Length: 301
Ligand SMILES: NC(=O)c1ccc[n+]([C@@H]2O[C@H](COP(=O)([O-])OP(=O)(O)OC[C@H]3O[C@@H](n4cnc5c(N)ncnc54)[C@H](OP(=O)(O)O)[C@@H]3O)[C@@H](O)[C@H]2O)c1
Image (cartoon, rainbow, N blue to C red; front, side, top):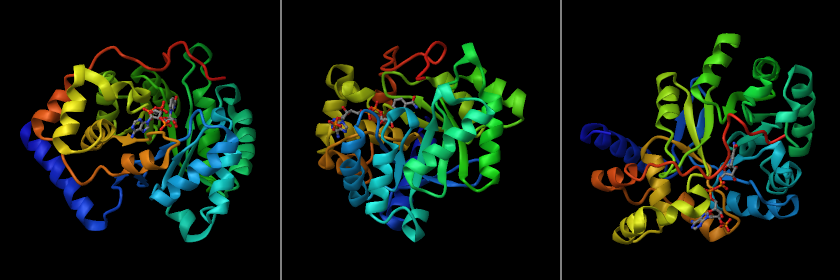
């Protein structure tokens, strides 16, 4: 980012922040607004997730990132109901994402899976439904997409997204359906920046959502203490520095924590800004440090 772009981004964030004090939202290509920070709930048991989501709602999270494959949609649903976020105004001010299992891709299977998932979540609609992995070795994303469009037409899904799609998968989906998704959720953190995927998404007005935004914690120590030194100079944590870097890049983030003090810390990213040199120092940490799986070969069946 050059100096002018950087200043514009940071001053736009400041305006947003002084407006409501709330987390900024990103406008998607379908017109919907998604809160830029959400809570990820991967690797939390169905039993535990109820308390974790309850803490997050109390901390001010208004975006939850769930998936059929996390086996805890029912616990997420209990948390939403117990805290009054399953209907009315509270529901309208909350963004709930969930994802389809790879083994349930295809038109009929996806429709059936969605009915079950919506029942587990105890909701009338979800804000975003996503294809979890492209599984190019068993490509069914276009049929699945048609089911997703039907669900959107019925008002049971507001926004359609994909995860882990490389440019070739986005192109193929577009060739076969004439549509681009609103969001591509990909692994993205300082040591695995996937600039080719991010560049393609930006060029096609597809919002980028970073999963494992801290590389599951590994990037808090990135660059031989670079992140830690920047954190010290601002009096904030290494996690806040990495997450602030994403925010300044315009990326949607879904950090996961089961601890309420960390959840609050991960939301508290608007009382400081990186200098241009600090932002560039984190840009320079890019490398081949994938923490998760390869979309060309992986399935989360
Ligand atoms: N679409 C996909 O294929 C896909 C794949 C992977 C993940 N995801 C989504 O992305 C979400 C986040 O990714 P992730 O869980 O892999 O990684 P992450 O958010 O980068 O890191 C989570 C790890 O960092 C720790 N942590 C959180 N906040 C911290 C803080 N302030 N200070 C120090 N440590 C902190 C957590 O520990 P504690 O919980 O103990 O605090 C946890 O071990 C997932 O929950 C899921 O919703 C999607």
